[in-house]
Picture 1: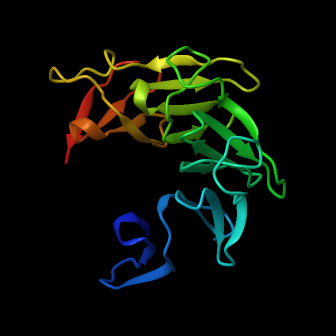
Picture 2 (picture 1 turned 60 degrees about the vertical axis):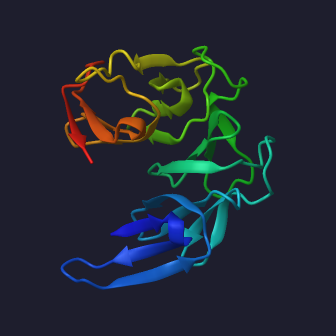
Length: 213
């Protein structure tokens, strides 16, 4: 298991059936990790405005200081890797999601990038991104408290979950910061303000259960 231990500025590896841990990257403001099919670990360095590949610490996205041009990112959040080792990055301060194809030094915008706002063509500090096998991009549009789906080459997204649809026990979803799909396609959302994980069955816009911290 790989853990972003952000408070201690490190990435740790914990071994199965063992109480031992190992710090594999130090002095990094990690905000997300992803492991590829070759065993390389991709790590976001939020304060360094980059994504690195470990081992080797190769910069695969950003690394050109904070900014909004296409060879820059600004406070990257979570990342997603596709089968071609392209890196999708939740580019938080730039209110967009970008893709960095392997070996390319500039990104392409796949969601947002139209200024901060709540229009369907906009995002507000997105923290997480997922991509399905058809290339559809799912975004945790964090400060709009919604989950948005962007089809390939779309100029705007479709809101698939909003705060009201995620009302459970009288509490609306507020500040979603991370997401994951299970093998059946159900979506799990980290609803940080309410200290819970929400589960949305595939094809549904309302949650059916939550798990509290």
